[in-house]
Amino acid sequence: MPEILDYDPLTGETVTMQYGSDGSMTFCTSIDMEPIFDENKRVLLEADHKRQLKQSWVKYASGITNVLILKWRQEHGVDFFNENHWPRVMELLNSREYRKLKTTELVHDR
Image 1 (cartoon, rainbow, N blue to C red):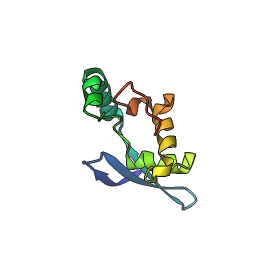
Image 2 (image 1 turned 90 degrees about the horizontal axis):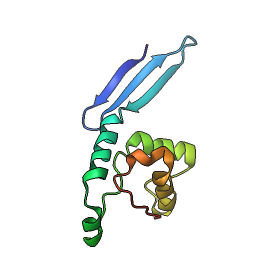
Image 3 (image 1 turned 120 degrees about the vertical axis):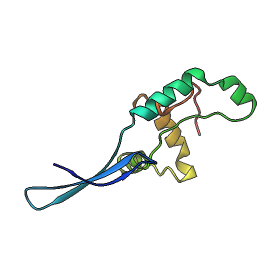
Image 4 (image 1 turned 60 degrees about the vertical axis):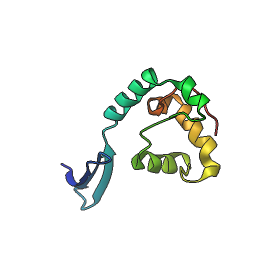
């Protein structure tokens, strides 16, 4: 059974450790995304995106956590903090897999 090493109430991230039968240790960082997805859905339904566009801003996504940033780097080779990778970040956000992170129906490419 995993042992909780740390919980960050600000981010909702939990770090656990588990010993393997071979003496190995496995560390895992996880986060419950459901509250973020619920809030994103609410914003998607309630936000006035046309007004935001007129004011030159739109809240595009929410919930891009440290866990997700690491996953994108490991699985897709995408560095969230590198502006040259932003076209790929937008492609991921617009994908079916990550659509629950979006807070708008708009599509941005960079």
